[in-house]
Length: 439
Image (tube, rainbow, N blue to C red):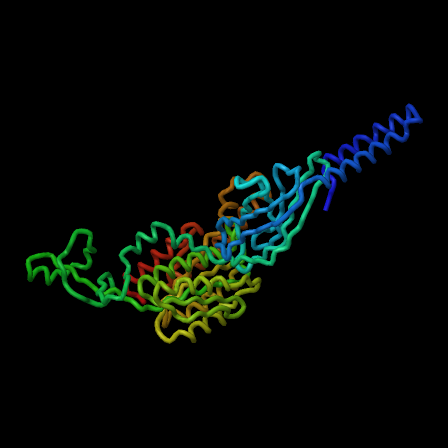
């Protein structure tokens, strides 16, 4: 289809007052205005007709993308005709998982392979998990006179699976940490800081001094240290609250997605360590509940299951969720709960539900730091509104600190931090629990 450009509209608008002035001074020239507009319309039509025409349009869409990571979509279009434009403007219709505005803008340039092929890249950052639909693509370019747009549309029925972000799993730091993990099928003994005594060995610099066997050292006239079997095959449950509080964004992404990334990072470590891992999500009622999986080969299954955790704008029911989880567990397990709370009432219900778990299981809470509230408190107030926000934010932070203190007094460990460091802190907490042999 053909549309007028901004240049054509401006020429018509500029010509109208000039023609009116001429007609007022010389009434016989009243037809100049009509002639000017007619000439521009004719030139606009001619410009659109001689403009290049669209051929094949190809859109390369990846099958999956990680939330919060840059995503590239390739576009290629072929034009025919003598008067080809220097570049092509385009727009791609997508759903709110890829863009809040519902569209992505891009430009195509002539490719190196030929003058008829135009290529370009569309960049997006997925904001929510799920199947992101890719809709219609619009392309338009101007004619040689710059008076007319020629526009074409092509429909696309493709979709992109937006999955949880596991970039931290691929980081060199994690891979270095796991470079000595068990590989293959050979039977080996793993000795570490567990709870089951294995043997006595010569004390080496760097060992924990608490492992020294002083009686054995006295008998043998040399320092000996105790070695223990490292506990394996423990049950680890990652319980993710996907209620309304966890749907609030932190640095552009919902809290639940930050929590899922941290959970998958720790799940990867636990699977590599030989423990059995499960995912559990809840809001107003229990949602996802996977079986216990073991072995690093099952990590991608956990990632796929985590991608199905939906965003629920409902108040979380801790009593129902945690009691259901407790009924499901038949042996002592480490339950890692990712949640947040905004009012004392929901916090009290959470504390009551958690108190029923600690008799049989080991519970660890993971809480993301509220950077927005911290920003209000740290910002220097300039108006009365700033003072009110700062006081309210400090009150909410004090309430959260009080709940964390109550959890710690109950004997429950709490991991709290910024979203950029919560994964590392959770791994350290998990390894600390294994070193103590608490599971």
